[in-house]
Image (cartoon, rainbow, N blue to C red; front, side, top):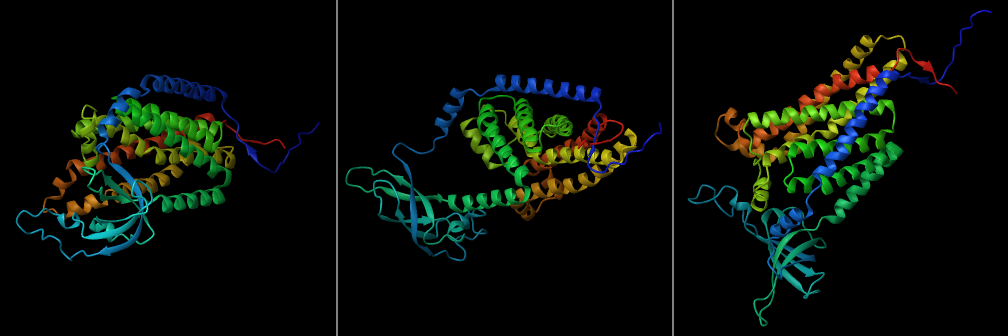
Length: 412
């Protein structure tokens, strides 16, 4: 009998290295068990969280927050409400007084249907607020039976435009990415659930920021990757690379925070939080924020690397593992370059107002860069960048180890 040569066209099925797959799955099972144990051990203390919430309620008894509809807007803001160079003037004070007013009709409350005239801050008056927009007013109860309730402006109600934007986002994602996009949105919802129901309350309960970041991130990644990309060896390789990348980011971030003596009080929000929960470790909270901030980009890189290795194996079934790793790393280096820009620009954009303010100060650039506010952003960027960069060779190596030596045609 002669040896026939079969030339089949069609998709190629990448063979798997059974031993490596066993090790990979064993590692992921251990990580899953550790995650479940961590969630149970770090589950927030509802009593402590409720006590902090009660303490943080800033409204006095009887104060109400009521919705109202703007009837008219009057802007009477002078060009300069305050001169910064005057004695005793505070920089930025010109933006603080209410130099405009609105007439709003109450949509609820004891005086429903009645018009109220209240002052609004300069920034709000000049932000595009117009008749028909909804606002929230603060109602102060009357001091006695003969007096009338007092009203003041609280904020603009932005629910409608935000919902429209969200619906547009969902429609675009579903139309372009179809099922994968819908699954990604579901994954995003799960991530928000973990963040709001576990991670934030756990931090408020006083749990370690490092532990909460690792456990919460692992829980998110297990569900997000398998749900959005499907259960497969390729996804498992990306998940392992992501988990290891998260660990590297957390470790580097913790070392950098301690080495730079960052307190975690780089913004006003942290200072406000300390007024209600001063016993919390704000260094730990900052560590957790650092890890969570890099999750999305890290996930993107690891999925890309695992997919690249699979595609390379299909295209080059005769490649050795060394050649496969080298080819995968060439793709990874290009991805690293573009992703680093993404991280830096994202953080720069979020801190643009701070950068503008610091640019006005007549201080050496090095002094500005090492200030707490800017140093936090620098540490966040660099720690995330180190974890991201190291995740590329880690994920590539895991993916190369899990694919077999040769590709075989898929059976029809």
